[in-house]
Amino acid sequence: MWNLVTDKSTDAVVAWAGDGKSFTVLHPEALPLLLPKRLGLFKESYGGFVRELALYGFRCVASDKHGIPVTFAVDDFERGRFDALKRVRRKANYGRSRRM
Image (cartoon, rainbow, N blue to C red):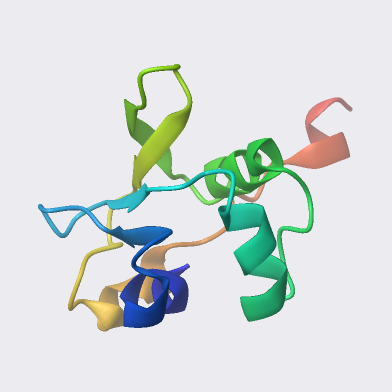
């Protein structure tokens, strides 16, 4: 996510929010088309992308006029703070193991 958000060539689709502590998906319909090409990840729908973000602790901080989450934040994901990314980790208790 960090590489995608900081890449100026993707600013039309996803970019840092003004506060530098969150990022905004400007065109949710275009993001699933962009991600597989850039990362080889998130081959699902935009909803799958949002669920994957949640596994890393990202929360929705703003939605568009239709209620679709478009701005996301998590502690230690901040513009210019690449060193802090090592603290952003996938949640340990996810998937099947939660149901057992």
